[in-house]
Length: 313
Image 1 (cartoon, helix red, strand yellow):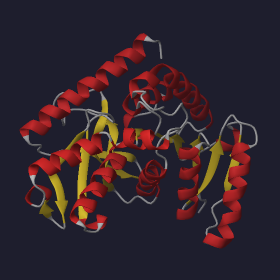
Image 2: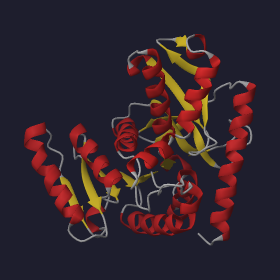
Image 3: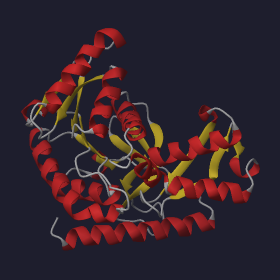
Image 4: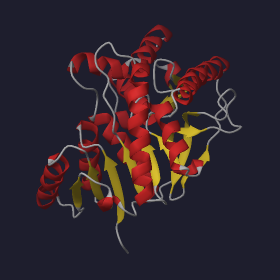
Protein backbone atom coordinates (compact mmCIF):
# COMPACT_ATOMS: atom_id res chain seq x y z
CA UNK A 1 0.00 0.00 0.00
CA UNK A 2 1.44 3.36 -0.98
CA UNK A 3 1.99 5.91 1.75
CA UNK A 4 -0.36 8.86 2.01
CA UNK A 5 0.99 12.23 0.92
CA UNK A 6 0.43 15.46 2.85
CA UNK A 7 1.52 18.78 1.39
CA UNK A 8 2.25 21.65 3.76
CA UNK A 9 2.20 25.05 2.07
CA UNK A 10 4.39 27.57 3.85
CA UNK A 11 7.71 26.53 5.41
CA UNK A 12 7.81 29.15 8.16
CA UNK A 13 7.54 28.23 11.84
CA UNK A 14 4.02 26.75 11.64
CA UNK A 15 4.62 24.90 8.37
CA UNK A 16 8.04 23.52 9.31
CA UNK A 17 6.78 22.42 12.75
CA UNK A 18 3.78 20.75 11.09
CA UNK A 19 6.08 18.91 8.66
CA UNK A 20 8.21 17.76 11.60
CA UNK A 21 5.26 16.47 13.62
CA UNK A 22 3.81 14.66 10.59
CA UNK A 23 7.16 13.09 9.69
CA UNK A 24 7.65 11.91 13.27
CA UNK A 25 4.21 10.24 13.27
CA UNK A 26 5.49 8.14 10.32
CA UNK A 27 2.10 7.55 8.60
CA UNK A 28 2.67 9.74 5.53
CA UNK A 29 5.18 11.39 3.25
CA UNK A 30 5.39 15.17 3.43
CA UNK A 31 5.92 17.85 0.78
CA UNK A 32 6.96 21.27 2.10
CA UNK A 33 6.24 24.16 -0.30
CA UNK A 34 7.49 27.73 0.03
CA UNK A 35 8.34 30.57 -2.37
CA UNK A 36 11.66 31.29 -0.62
CA UNK A 37 14.38 29.58 -2.64
CA UNK A 38 16.29 26.92 -0.75
CA UNK A 39 14.39 27.23 2.53
CA UNK A 40 11.89 24.34 2.12
CA UNK A 41 14.61 22.21 0.53
CA UNK A 42 16.96 22.83 3.46
CA UNK A 43 14.32 22.19 6.11
CA UNK A 44 13.15 19.03 4.31
CA UNK A 45 16.71 17.69 4.14
CA UNK A 46 17.21 18.46 7.83
CA UNK A 47 14.00 16.55 8.64
CA UNK A 48 15.07 13.60 6.48
CA UNK A 49 18.36 13.47 8.38
CA UNK A 50 16.45 13.35 11.67
CA UNK A 51 14.74 10.11 10.59
CA UNK A 52 17.62 7.75 11.41
CA UNK A 53 17.81 9.16 14.94
CA UNK A 54 14.09 9.52 15.63
CA UNK A 55 13.19 6.30 13.83
CA UNK A 56 10.82 7.35 11.05
CA UNK A 57 10.87 6.53 7.34
CA UNK A 58 8.69 9.44 6.19
CA UNK A 59 10.02 11.03 3.02
CA UNK A 60 10.12 14.83 3.26
CA UNK A 61 10.47 16.84 0.05
CA UNK A 62 11.09 20.59 -0.09
CA UNK A 63 10.11 22.57 -3.16
CA UNK A 64 9.37 26.05 -4.50
CA UNK A 65 6.68 24.78 -6.89
CA UNK A 66 3.65 22.50 -6.84
CA UNK A 67 4.66 19.60 -9.12
CA UNK A 68 5.96 17.52 -6.20
CA UNK A 69 2.67 18.07 -4.38
CA UNK A 70 0.64 16.32 -7.11
CA UNK A 71 -1.94 13.77 -5.91
CA UNK A 72 -1.70 14.81 -2.27
CA UNK A 73 -4.29 13.33 0.07
CA UNK A 74 -4.29 16.41 2.31
CA UNK A 75 -3.12 19.97 1.67
CA UNK A 76 -2.35 22.04 4.78
CA UNK A 77 -2.31 25.80 4.15
CA UNK A 78 -0.17 27.77 6.60
CA UNK A 79 0.74 30.57 4.17
CA UNK A 80 0.11 34.17 5.10
CA UNK A 81 1.48 36.94 7.22
CA UNK A 82 1.59 36.24 10.96
CA UNK A 83 -0.01 38.61 13.40
CA UNK A 84 2.22 41.33 14.78
CA UNK A 85 1.85 42.81 18.29
CA UNK A 86 -1.23 45.02 18.45
CA UNK A 87 -2.56 43.71 15.13
CA UNK A 88 -6.02 42.14 15.10
CA UNK A 89 -6.69 39.01 13.10
CA UNK A 90 -9.12 41.06 11.04
CA UNK A 91 -6.35 43.38 9.84
CA UNK A 92 -4.71 40.39 8.23
CA UNK A 93 -7.81 39.78 6.14
CA UNK A 94 -7.00 41.43 2.84
CA UNK A 95 -3.40 40.32 2.36
CA UNK A 96 -3.96 36.77 3.57
CA UNK A 97 -7.14 36.28 1.50
CA UNK A 98 -5.07 36.92 -1.63
CA UNK A 99 -2.38 34.48 -0.54
CA UNK A 100 -4.84 31.72 0.45
CA UNK A 101 -6.76 32.08 -2.83
CA UNK A 102 -3.52 31.77 -4.81
CA UNK A 103 -2.14 28.71 -3.01
CA UNK A 104 -5.54 26.98 -3.00
CA UNK A 105 -5.89 27.31 -6.77
CA UNK A 106 -2.32 26.11 -7.40
CA UNK A 107 -2.46 23.15 -5.02
CA UNK A 108 -5.90 21.90 -6.06
CA UNK A 109 -4.87 22.09 -9.72
CA UNK A 110 -2.28 19.40 -8.86
CA UNK A 111 -4.33 17.51 -6.26
CA UNK A 112 -8.03 17.75 -7.22
CA UNK A 113 -9.04 14.98 -4.79
CA UNK A 114 -7.20 16.37 -1.76
CA UNK A 115 -8.72 17.53 1.49
CA UNK A 116 -7.76 21.03 2.61
CA UNK A 117 -6.92 22.09 6.16
CA UNK A 118 -6.42 25.83 6.68
CA UNK A 119 -4.31 27.33 9.48
CA UNK A 120 -3.87 30.85 8.06
CA UNK A 121 -5.54 33.73 9.95
CA UNK A 122 -8.18 35.09 10.20
CA UNK A 123 -8.92 31.37 10.30
CA UNK A 124 -12.67 31.12 9.68
CA UNK A 125 -12.62 33.60 6.79
CA UNK A 126 -9.53 31.97 5.23
CA UNK A 127 -11.24 28.57 5.38
CA UNK A 128 -14.17 30.15 3.53
CA UNK A 129 -11.74 31.50 0.89
CA UNK A 130 -10.20 28.04 0.41
CA UNK A 131 -13.65 26.43 0.15
CA UNK A 132 -14.81 29.01 -2.37
CA UNK A 133 -11.82 28.62 -4.70
CA UNK A 134 -11.13 24.90 -4.29
CA UNK A 135 -14.69 24.04 -5.36
CA UNK A 136 -14.38 20.95 -3.19
CA UNK A 137 -17.34 19.46 -1.29
CA UNK A 138 -17.78 20.88 2.22
CA UNK A 139 -16.67 17.65 3.93
CA UNK A 140 -13.20 18.10 2.40
CA UNK A 141 -12.44 21.66 3.58
CA UNK A 142 -11.84 22.55 7.22
CA UNK A 143 -9.93 24.93 9.45
CA UNK A 144 -7.68 24.19 12.40
CA UNK A 145 -8.68 26.35 15.34
CA UNK A 146 -10.87 24.66 17.92
CA UNK A 147 -8.31 21.98 18.76
CA UNK A 148 -5.71 24.66 19.44
CA UNK A 149 -8.11 26.80 21.48
CA UNK A 150 -9.31 23.73 23.39
CA UNK A 151 -5.69 22.71 24.06
CA UNK A 152 -5.02 26.13 25.56
CA UNK A 153 -8.16 25.83 27.70
CA UNK A 154 -7.16 22.33 28.85
CA UNK A 155 -3.62 23.51 29.58
CA UNK A 156 -4.79 26.40 31.77
CA UNK A 157 -7.24 24.14 33.67
CA UNK A 158 -4.49 21.55 34.27
CA UNK A 159 -2.20 24.30 35.54
CA UNK A 160 -4.91 25.56 37.90
CA UNK A 161 -5.85 22.15 39.31
CA UNK A 162 -2.42 20.47 39.17
CA UNK A 163 -3.75 17.49 37.20
CA UNK A 164 -2.75 15.72 33.99
CA UNK A 165 -3.88 17.37 30.76
CA UNK A 166 -4.89 13.84 29.64
CA UNK A 167 -7.70 13.87 32.20
CA UNK A 168 -9.24 17.03 30.76
CA UNK A 169 -11.81 17.05 27.97
CA UNK A 170 -12.79 20.46 26.66
CA UNK A 171 -14.46 22.03 23.64
CA UNK A 172 -13.98 25.57 22.40
CA UNK A 173 -16.47 26.46 19.67
CA UNK A 174 -17.23 29.41 17.41
CA UNK A 175 -14.88 31.74 15.57
CA UNK A 176 -11.13 31.64 16.13
CA UNK A 177 -10.78 35.00 17.81
CA UNK A 178 -11.99 37.07 20.73
CA UNK A 179 -15.58 35.80 20.31
CA UNK A 180 -14.70 32.09 20.68
CA UNK A 181 -16.88 30.08 23.04
CA UNK A 182 -15.09 27.83 25.57
CA UNK A 183 -17.92 25.53 26.70
CA UNK A 184 -17.59 25.04 30.45
CA UNK A 185 -20.70 22.82 30.37
CA UNK A 186 -18.86 20.18 28.31
CA UNK A 187 -15.49 20.56 30.00
CA UNK A 188 -14.65 17.78 32.43
CA UNK A 189 -11.73 16.62 34.57
CA UNK A 190 -11.70 12.80 34.74
CA UNK A 191 -15.42 12.98 34.01
CA UNK A 192 -16.14 15.58 36.73
CA UNK A 193 -17.64 18.85 35.42
CA UNK A 194 -15.05 21.61 35.65
CA UNK A 195 -17.76 23.91 37.00
CA UNK A 196 -17.78 21.72 40.15
CA UNK A 197 -14.01 22.02 40.62
CA UNK A 198 -13.09 25.63 39.88
CA UNK A 199 -14.91 28.65 41.37
CA UNK A 200 -16.84 30.64 38.78
CA UNK A 201 -14.70 33.79 39.01
CA UNK A 202 -11.52 31.78 38.47
CA UNK A 203 -13.08 29.74 35.66
CA UNK A 204 -14.24 32.95 33.96
CA UNK A 205 -10.66 34.24 34.13
CA UNK A 206 -9.39 31.02 32.51
CA UNK A 207 -12.02 31.34 29.76
CA UNK A 208 -10.88 34.90 29.09
CA UNK A 209 -7.20 33.87 29.03
CA UNK A 210 -8.12 31.15 26.52
CA UNK A 211 -9.82 33.71 24.26
CA UNK A 212 -6.70 35.86 24.34
CA UNK A 213 -4.32 32.87 24.19
CA UNK A 214 -2.87 33.63 20.77
CA UNK A 215 -2.41 37.32 21.56
CA UNK A 216 -0.61 36.48 24.81
CA UNK A 217 2.00 34.49 22.89
CA UNK A 218 2.31 37.17 20.17
CA UNK A 219 3.00 39.79 22.88
CA UNK A 220 5.66 37.61 24.51
CA UNK A 221 7.44 36.62 21.30
CA UNK A 222 7.47 40.20 19.93
CA UNK A 223 7.91 38.79 16.41
CA UNK A 224 5.68 36.07 14.99
CA UNK A 225 3.02 33.98 16.67
CA UNK A 226 2.46 30.50 18.14
CA UNK A 227 3.59 27.46 16.18
CA UNK A 228 4.26 24.49 18.47
CA UNK A 229 0.63 24.07 19.58
CA UNK A 230 -0.91 24.94 16.16
CA UNK A 231 1.28 22.33 14.45
CA UNK A 232 0.36 19.74 17.09
CA UNK A 233 -3.33 20.46 16.48
CA UNK A 234 -3.17 20.08 12.70
CA UNK A 235 -1.12 16.88 13.04
CA UNK A 236 -3.92 15.45 15.19
CA UNK A 237 -6.47 16.32 12.48
CA UNK A 238 -4.31 14.64 9.81
CA UNK A 239 -3.87 11.57 11.99
CA UNK A 240 -7.62 11.19 12.54
CA UNK A 241 -8.24 11.47 8.77
CA UNK A 242 -5.36 9.35 7.42
CA UNK A 243 -5.75 6.58 10.03
CA UNK A 244 -9.57 6.85 9.93
CA UNK A 245 -9.69 7.28 13.70
CA UNK A 246 -13.01 9.16 13.65
CA UNK A 247 -11.97 11.40 16.53
CA UNK A 248 -14.48 14.09 17.50
CA UNK A 249 -12.50 17.31 17.33
CA UNK A 250 -13.54 20.98 17.30
CA UNK A 251 -12.76 22.29 13.79
CA UNK A 252 -13.91 25.13 11.56
CA UNK A 253 -16.51 23.41 9.39
CA UNK A 254 -19.40 24.52 7.19
CA UNK A 255 -22.46 24.55 9.42
CA UNK A 256 -25.86 23.30 8.26
CA UNK A 257 -28.89 22.91 10.49
CA UNK A 258 -27.15 21.82 13.71
CA UNK A 259 -26.39 25.10 15.50
CA UNK A 260 -28.61 28.17 15.52
CA UNK A 261 -27.17 31.24 13.81
CA UNK A 262 -24.27 29.34 12.20
CA UNK A 263 -25.75 28.05 8.94
CA UNK A 264 -23.72 28.68 5.80
CA UNK A 265 -20.64 29.73 7.77
CA UNK A 266 -17.34 28.10 8.66
CA UNK A 267 -17.28 28.13 12.45
CA UNK A 268 -15.72 25.96 15.11
CA UNK A 269 -17.99 22.98 15.85
CA UNK A 270 -17.40 19.40 17.06
CA UNK A 271 -16.67 17.28 13.98
CA UNK A 272 -15.97 13.58 13.47
CA UNK A 273 -12.87 13.31 11.26
CA UNK A 274 -12.19 10.14 9.28
CA UNK A 275 -11.12 8.95 5.85
CA UNK A 276 -13.97 10.88 4.24
CA UNK A 277 -12.95 14.10 5.96
CA UNK A 278 -15.72 15.70 8.00
CA UNK A 279 -17.97 12.67 8.42
CA UNK A 280 -20.39 14.28 10.86
CA UNK A 281 -20.92 17.56 12.69
CA UNK A 282 -21.87 16.47 16.19
CA UNK A 283 -24.77 18.28 17.86
CA UNK A 284 -24.24 19.44 21.45
CA UNK A 285 -27.08 20.76 23.57
CA UNK A 286 -25.40 23.97 24.68
CA UNK A 287 -26.34 26.01 27.72
CA UNK A 288 -28.51 29.00 26.76
CA UNK A 289 -25.71 31.54 27.30
CA UNK A 290 -23.27 29.40 25.31
CA UNK A 291 -25.74 29.08 22.44
CA UNK A 292 -26.21 32.85 22.40
CA UNK A 293 -22.43 33.38 22.50
CA UNK A 294 -22.01 30.95 19.58
CA UNK A 295 -24.56 32.90 17.51
CA UNK A 296 -22.72 36.12 18.32
CA UNK A 297 -19.41 34.53 17.32
CA UNK A 298 -20.96 33.38 14.03
CA UNK A 299 -22.05 36.97 13.35
CA UNK A 300 -18.42 38.10 13.71
CA UNK A 301 -17.36 35.37 11.25
CA UNK A 302 -20.08 36.45 8.81
CA UNK A 303 -18.79 40.03 8.87
CA UNK A 304 -15.32 38.81 7.86
CA UNK A 305 -16.68 36.58 5.09
CA UNK A 306 -18.84 39.45 3.77
CA UNK A 307 -15.70 41.62 3.76
CA UNK A 308 -13.84 38.94 1.80
CA UNK A 309 -16.63 38.94 -0.80
CA UNK A 310 -16.59 42.73 -1.03
CA UNK A 311 -12.83 42.69 -1.62
CA UNK A 312 -13.37 40.34 -4.53
CA UNK A 313 -11.77 37.23 -3.03
